Length: 265
Image 1 (cartoon, rainbow, N blue to C red):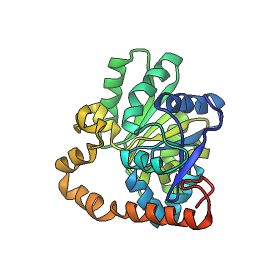
Image 2 (image 1 turned 180 degrees about the horizontal axis):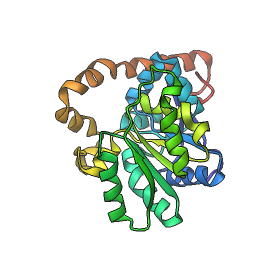
Image 3 (image 1 turned 45 degrees about the horizontal axis):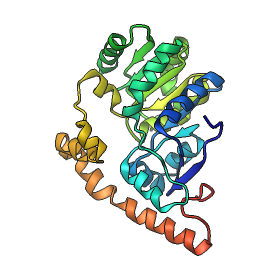
């Protein structure tokens, strides 16, 4: 695998050009390097949030790896000289990554989701991978409006567990901002934002069928499950993505540079 993946940019979000298998190996390589870091998986919603929230955009700039989550982002790259080869969601990564961690004796920590979900997910993962070492689980309440000192006990519990990989399931933008905040403090652990993935593993939330996910329709399945929570996101906020991409494309044309150039932003 390449030591330094090529990057493109969608809006204010940099994205690494990696295949799925390369992404899994890149996360393991980060762990092997022993310097810590964190991994993000940008989708349409993340691009919109980054356009509006400088702190979120800064977290993305600081991420060790940024992996394309969502077909619209991958489709956007088809307008670029360098295309993104695959959709790589946090939910898709969890299974193969945990399997590789089990093979290599890496310690995995589950952080986030609702009460009891991480414990249930840990039990399910141990059933699938008997050699997997779960370093710990935690489902804390995280309020980023409060000073970092309020979150110090969470950080200390992670540090004490000595994990190699921490799966962080707070949802965006909280998990990305939290990972950015604590990454150095918990190094050499590598943090990975995984959204609702612990719920999927635990079976407390249904994931879209493969045929829907493969056709970029996972959002429709989620909307049908949680219409009140997701309506504003999908029909009010996320359509701004098209304007962000159009603005970026026009700016690149005026400047005479390639659309998606990682030096933009």
